[in-house]
Every structure is written in structure tokens, then in C-alpha cells.
Length: 535
Image (cartoon, rainbow, N blue to C red; front, side):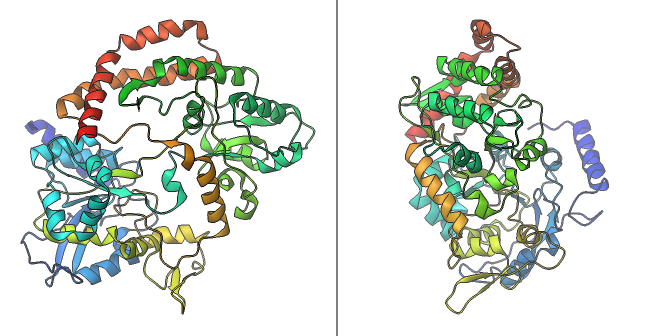
């Protein structure tokens, strides 16, 4: 990348200003420190190096604790002889600071837990080919047995993190244990109290049965307060509900998906037109919350705690309703629906991994030690240590090896709040594999969620589109098209559903998208898919 002097000066100035503004977990006014000399590593066990070294690390901070004060990282530094200096701006500021760091060349030794939204696949390719990022595949083969084992046993993962030039520039977070690893996004949950009140014994399995139940939610006062205040279905801008309802019309994604090797753009299909028509019907008949496109997540949850919701999305239902986990086990998960446009039930599946969670930069003088440092967290014991923190804070081992959970110290609302002060594995995509933790008993609520997932998602799941990489030219071209395309489709969805735009204008809508070079957009994604499939 060509760097103009004035841009570099501005970038450096902006970094200084951001650091001065605070909100950073790193020491105020300090420079990121790292060891300049390369040291010998121990290929097995701990410590990783006999002579202490310091590596610099940049990551999004969740704000619950300064990273240098987290017990997990402190103990791991003692285990490895590898100390870290941290630059952890708040999650909201992280993408800006990351881009400025790349632009200035003053980039940390390690980019940690960035995730593919902020550290995009295009950035991986671009900075990898420039030499700013270190290729990892040889380092993995020589010094990272846990990561190599993961790739050997899961060729799909290796395909999904290998860029178009054949290199791996970033490691993923892999969802292995727990039923939620399959979830495309948080599920939808029915209000079990309402189902009991109405005597509903079997959940809807067709789009018509679904409509009929929403009507009953609206008309039969299932919350029993004598007021017509029930909201049969709601969301915040359709962002969580959309995937599950699109599937009822045979669509796996709101954008690019793949069917039998053929890539399509779903928002111009007839299936999508039928989805919009159905959602407009729900909106017009007060079966879909009238504030869907204007409310916040907090407003959604307030309605749930008032027992006004019949069907709603969230990671777990009690996040919306405010109920206990025991009460939430009466709220069944949404069952996939069939229709004349999708005769077999279908659910979109998560790819099971998040890219862009760990990279080594060319400023790093000790890449061998660094890959060994991260490799531990791709083992079952390493994940348990990263996730739960050191023994004695939130857990301890019983006589039979079982995990006994401890109460958090006074002043913390929950164990999760306390856990967020112990480990960076909280609220961000840390590089690891989420193995089941040995000795940790599955709670009754976890068993409920697993059973619901095994019944209603796993048998019907399909991956919408694999994780692919584009060439830099393809990415640049795609970015140009996407700027207007995504904004237009998002606006028109809201207009069609609320009736601001009549469905009679569908042909005009499609024509507008076709004029946005959608044919080339599909062609680029088809080429990327074909490369992935033949890899």
C-alpha cells in the first residue's frame, strides 16, 4: 500500500488523540512494549521460553477490567514467561484504532479477538500480501500441534481460513461444544404461559398454522389482563427474526446464498417477494409489532417483562422476559415452517467459526513463541482455563474431578460479571475452540436448550454460504457495489413490510437492484464459491 506522508502524519496524530481521550485499558501515555531480540523456545510444556520476553497485543476491550489485571492473563504469563503489553480500546473504538495502526505501520505484535467484522477478510488478504501479516501455516506445522490437529481433523476449517494466495494469516474461534454452536443467530422463543392459556399442544409447522396462532395471540387475551395489548410477534429491525422466517420461504440468507452449487442474490427472488408479502400482512393486521423498525433492544425487553409478547427472538428467552432459567424452560423454541415455497423444513446454520481472531504481524520478533503461546488455547484444557479463569476464583475441582462453581465476590451482580474481570473470553471472539469442559455438569436449563436444538434446528440445518476469501480486486469491486446495494435493500424491506412502499412496486425494486450491477456481484461470489469448493 502506498503511504502518503500527510496521511501518515494525520494517522499518527489521530492515534495520539484517541489514546489521550481515554477508554483504553492500556497504561495512559505509555508505548506498546515488545522484545526486539528473537529467543529460543521450548517445543513442549511450560515455560515456552526460558528467558522472559514481552509481546505487544491489540484487542477490543469490554471495559470490565484492565487486561493487565486479569488473573487468567497474569497466571498465563507466569506459566509461559511471555509478558504482554496491551492496547485494548473499547469495542466501539476498536475498528478505528485498528485501521489507524495499520495505516501508520505502528501495529502491535499480535492482533487478538478482532473478529471478521472489524478485521475483515479483505484486510487479511491485503495486509497479508503486503507482508504486514505473517503467514501462519508453517509456524502451525512446526510449533502448534493443537491447531494442526484441529486443521487435520477438520478440512473445512482449513479451507475457510486459507486465503486466495494459499496462506493462513489469521486463526479462528471455533464453536465445538454446546448446542448454540449450531445457531445462526439467537433463536425465537414462544411464550409458554400463553400457549398453556390457549391450550396449544403442538407448535405451528406450516406458515398457515403460524399465522393462525398469531391471530389467537392477538385476539384471545392470553396474558389475561383484559386489555388488547398483546404483541404476537416482534423484533428490532427484523435483524434476529428474519433468518428464521426467510427459511419458511426457502431462503437461507438475506443476501448471497448457495443452492446446489449455484449462487443467488435472495432479495430479488420470488421467494423473497412472498416473504415480504406475508410480513406486510402480519404488519397490517397488527400481528407484527408496529414499532419493529423504530424500537431499541431495551424497549423490546421491557415489553417482554410486561408479559406482552407471544413470539420473540433472543439468545435465551429469559433475557427478554426477565424470568428465571427454570421458568424459561416452559418457553419452547420456534419450529421451522413449511410453505408452498419451501415444502421441506429448513433452518440456516452457523458456519461454526469466527475468522480474524488472531494474527501475528511483521513487527513481531518472536513469531515461534507467539504461535506456541496461542496454541495452548486450542486444547480442551486451554479452553477451560481461558473460559473459567484460574482455579479458586469462580470454580474449584471436587474430589471426583468435577467442577464446583463458586459464588462471585460481594459487589458483583452475577458470576458472568465477575468472570469478565478474570479473563478476556467475555463478549468478544477470542481465538480458541469451545470444547466441552471436563467435569462441568450440564445444567437442567442447558439440557433443555440442547434438546430443543436437537429437535428443531439440527435436523433441518443448512449452511447458507461458506466462508470464502476474495482477491483484492474482487473485494474492491464488491465493496463498490455493496455500498448502495445493502442500504437500498434494507430500506426497502422496511418500506414493503410497513406498507410505505406497495408490493405493486416490486418490479421497479428489482430493476433498481439489477442496475446496481447485481449480475457482477453474483458472478464474483460464484467465483469465490467455486474456488472454495475445489480447494
